[in-house]
Image (cartoon, rainbow, N blue to C red; front, side):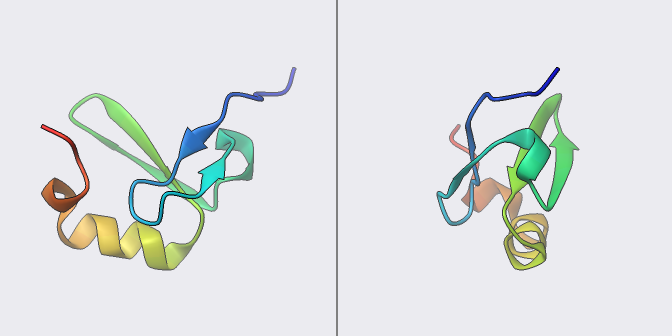
Length: 53
């Protein structure tokens, strides 16, 4: 079974599927997916910048 749900990279806004994401991380019970290592590292450096509260 393939996961065809589209998610959005919180840093750059690129649409991708969890299967095509370069990496992901879990934070406060939410999984975030990233199109590149750069976006992942940018997010990890300051996640509150990219999370809607």
